[in-house]
Image (tube, rainbow, N blue to C red; front, side, top):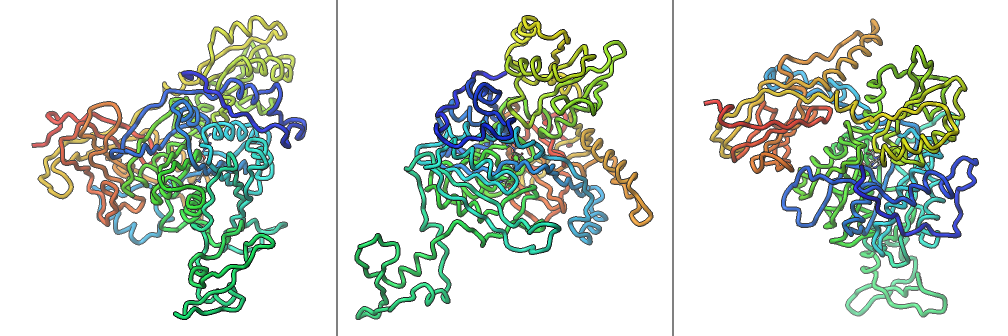
Length: 640
Ligand SMILES: C[S@@+](CC[C@H](N)C(=O)[O-])C[C@H]1O[C@@H](n2cnc3c(N)ncnc32)[C@H](O)[C@@H]1O
């Protein structure tokens, strides 16, 4: 349940072009769902601190949660951001997957190390796991986007700018939303990011080779450091650039009469050539000098849709100053946070997915950055990410099957011997406006969804994650006599609570007298993850079905002790409960190399994690990203 609702104000700009009549379906203005959501305000949820990395005097944040929930939190705490970059999912109909690599098992180290050295990365044992989906239809996407933009606007400082990164799928529609939200007088540029390389013929169209980044400011008081992002002149540019008579001072210093950039009627003035060259070439709105990240780029963080640091560097330098707060509410791989820190800015990274938060945390830790990891308890991240939670939920509702006759509002139906087909509504975790069951949604169910159903339907089931008040909704249903269909309300959270089985680990403690890496070592003897093993089982089944003589079935086998399912271990020697303090950590990369306390090494994992002080807690992250914590009872576990 939200703690309260925080108003979205400031209002959208009146008198702008709106998409209100689009297809006669998109309705985000007037008495419809989105405007009701906007009237009610942003839901403010409880925020839990998961970890503090360093002192974090700058207040940097890595937030796991939805964009709108994060904005509600910032607004409530009077935190304003000075620059926003967002690269939201594009509504491209794609599902993004993460490749999950099986790690090297330290107990059979030599053999595996040898084998893996000889393989290239893509041939390592791996399977895929869905991270997030881009699967809205246009109307839903624009409604969702509108709500997000309004939330972001409400936390922008007076001089803040926003860069909205999109592409040909939906960019043109979002431009109209942006005009409405920020005002077309605050539209600055449509930046074309052309990514060179991979020039090729594609069937029936020209190859799409650019993304579009819309730049708006909140007001005319904005920051544009165009000199900071000018492109340095090469030596050979000199003649082309000057193209006018060059004069010389007595000391030999060259100068020209400058007329460029002068208002009509203004006198030319003397400008030194070395200054012109130093100033560099002014940047235009077509950026064709930043390649996109290739799959094998060593700077990549294995995050689908990851953008190059050079792109963010340009944006952050152009539209913010040192010490300012740069926010990315769809932060993905954490590139905005990493670059913002490198350039002396503070940052807020927000993302709905666990994988994003872990990737960003590890990336920032490796760069020696200080920050807090926070989690918004908004119910979305019941599992690793919304896509996987939706899949899991569907498989857990007893008897739920797809039903072709029902429209997409319904997740499917349950066949009941007495009642016949019972349609089931499940909120979409990717769409925050459907997450909360309130009178607005129930009204829509009673007056739009139920009348569209076959007349034989006697009962429907409505699942919810969040509900304004169960009594209020039930009273509302009882007081409405326009339908005889029985409506049963069910809490979705109870289903997931029952099935998430924590990972199991067996370990002991040794005193190492190791001055370099710490005097205590927790040695992992066994690790068992039901969640990962289920994924591997599904992968093996699929591979078996698709096997052929050319491509024989090669299952992924996991050893008895299961250590190859571990990606990360951390010891907390500071506190036995509450937020996490990583006093010693090991990350095992996909090739098996160890990153110790953020520092890359060329060592393989030896099955231990070390600390200087006595460990109180152990945390293990499996290769899919689930984290489990154990108490380290030193006296019981100490191996004398
Ligand atoms: C295109 S990716 C961003 C990639 C990022 N710019 C980078 O360079 O790594 C979009 C991200 O939005 C996240 N996301 C989707 N819906 C969200 C929401 N409602 N709030 C916050 N993040 C969301 C996804 O988990 C995904 O990481």
